[in-house]
Image 1: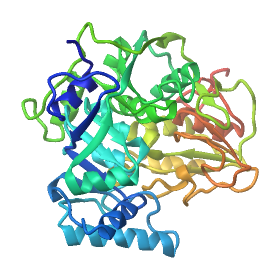
Image 2: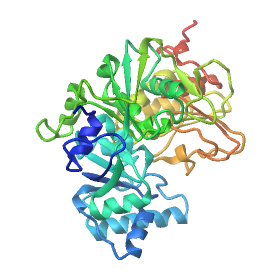
Image 3: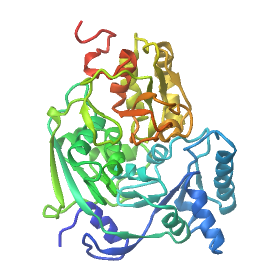
Length: 429
């Protein structure tokens, strides 16, 4: 019987020849990703029950990233708990502060996770890794505890939404705009507990960074995860990280696989998109309204990669951040920070009047390094704009691509990035 990619992966990890949506399975997990915010709660559950062990120290990846370096004593204690546990249990893969960055972006570059595998973490954006053709999803601290202890987790087989994207992406439009367009169409719960499977000639032409952005935001549509099938782009990316074909299993959806819903997107008609407060599905064309901004934020596991920083530098070069706007640029990892410096991007950011921060989740979830105050208006390349997400509940958060954030920082109001040329002139000049 026909199955989708995700169904095949979950079947293989639960000892079934075939699974169907709605079926309950106990699934082995190849990897468990841990950070300092949700992991301590899971560890306490295990300690309280006399179950203080790990199923396999070589299959756990620990990366503190949410509130590092620690902003207060509470954060410092959570970091200490993770670090001491790593040492006590002999966790083999630990990317400490100064050696890592945002967990999901660090993980995608480690050469550890592979297509066809399963990954769970106590973080909703674990779906990011689905771009590698694996089943990756966030779980609560209770399920995280079970995964750490036994290397197994219960799942209900999710239904799958097929998102078929075709056509040429227009200049100034990015994968972030495509995913915001899809979420606008289907709503913030339009893919509730579904796998969002991305296909089409547009996806085939995307680099891995763009694909990670698409799968990263599956949760913003209520999805269980996002996924993209392995192709030559994936193989080349993995090979560059020491993972060669033959060391992993590639799954593809059967031609007659059943999908709950099919969404068709003409990429040539997608425009730079901004999600207005207070929900990611509230999308409008960038520049529709000249809304004044006080903050511009570039970073997060969604859009803090080197390609994102290059987009920002292209617009900021030879320009200045508008008076009254605080712009913060956060490279997602130490490696990306270093590459940006080597390429001269940091100098462009500083010359434009932007502040460059250290790799962390930071203000994306209102922890530190750019937290919003009362009535602040922020345009951000992050993934959520819920009330209070980045700080004070009266603040307004607008989600957009890094290019749109940069254009808006220069203009002082939400602007269309297509109005800015790479040579420092405006398109209308």
